[in-house]
Image (tube, rainbow, N blue to C red; front, top):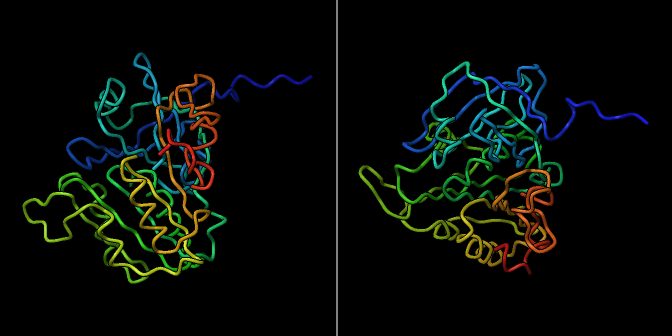
Amino acid sequence: MNQPMLEDSPYLPKWAEITRIEQLTESEKLFELRLVSGEPLGHTPGQFVELSVMGIGEAPISVSSAPAENGVFELAIRKIGNLTTAIHGSVTGDRVGIRGPFGTHFPVEEAKGKDLLFVAGGIGLIPLRSFIRFVLDHRDDYGEVIVLFGAKNPSERIFLYELEQWGNREDIVYLDSVDKSGPGWQGNVGVITTLFSKIHVDPSRTFCIVVGPPVMYRFVILEAKAKGIPDRQIFLSLERKMKCGIGKCGHCQINHLYVCQDGPVFRYTDIFDLEEAL
């Protein structure tokens, strides 16, 4: 009986080198990495990795980039604890540990030929950006594309350069809003659901992909259903209390589901009756 090689163990991190760092906001940085082995990460948009800093610990982090032929991938990280503070103190050339990718992914293949409505709240844009960028890299494979993005205030908007690019493209519709206005802001003010009145969708062919704080999910789902989008064509990402990434620790368990394995991306029809999930 063949025994698995140690290097194939899901418990063993692989070394990755930080190749670029970009400050996104006061609290978020974007890290570009490449596995030292030279192999591609091999993720599908919507999946996450376990990022480790030796001597500090590890945490699940969504991959924010689309799969790339050159092997690089990107993690956008908010500084909120010991590990994220440590990674924010890193410099180009430093090495970190990577396990994964893990979890389910967005309906990349199923949605081909369909229209897409992306709805991102706050740092929910981090994982959703991976699918958006994949779609834009394969634009002819998909139908109409609408991106709605909401933030608490203008200073918390991330990926500003890309947001501007999306707004200037003729092959997608990009709309954004802030809960509270700020200096120089001339756009929409209000929660993200106020943007739904500004868009038109063909519900029979539209896939709605939603990522953001749990409090927004119920209201966005109501708006999507009001547009006639079938429950089966609504997808959500639940990044709830994940820790080990492989369904062993139980931190992310919701009834019979493990978010790190059965998710983080779920079809709405699979979780709509779980009060603990939404």
